[in-house]
Length: 258
Image 1 (tube, rainbow, N blue to C red):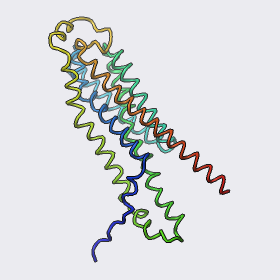
Image 2 (image 1 turned 60 degrees about the vertical axis):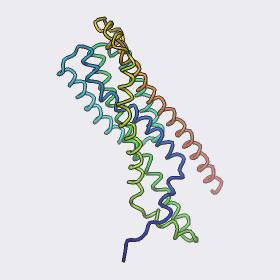
Image 3 (image 1 turned 180 degrees about the horizontal axis):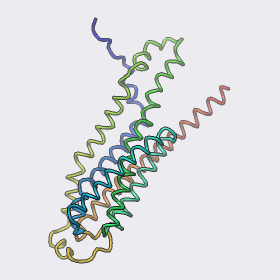
Image 4 (image 1 turned 90 degrees about the vertical axis):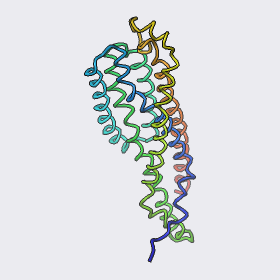
């Protein structure tokens, strides 16, 4: 006998508005996330820091990412994923503007940003499980509710589909990968907008802000990263509001039934 064909219900997750809001926020996050990782060594070089010091900044970012993923993974089992994701995205945007754009005019500011960015930004992917678990469970609950109805046969394929979570994670990885591909050429274009003549005229002046490093050539790129996270946070806020409304309606129906 050949393999059992998948049921039509396998595509039901595509009708979830909340999931597509998550995908949109995830895409915005991807467009900003990879830029500091790529450009920190160049930024450190324009601060006149040697390669060893630049390596310390990257090491702090990577160390922070481990801490961030572990902490967020723990919190995702206890806190609403929309609220947790919103907090991560908003705080990462603030850290980008304040710690990188304002305070990273010297080594201390750069190291502070590297650690904070690693902890905050990398935790986003650890929230995915909190988003996908309820969607995966939804159809199992539907099966229980309708187990004595005529719909049981159509619900069975999806309710028992072990690949649903993998499919959802694949979509999230794909949407984030779009940002990974395009963020580098975008950030390169933003830094190249600063003319070479202007850059050379400011190279030897003191930096009062992180925005001033390299004669200001990183300013637009820093703003771009901060706005990507701010946009993702705004989208997550919409998702959180929608999720709260759905929960209130569900709670109201339960009270009426009781």
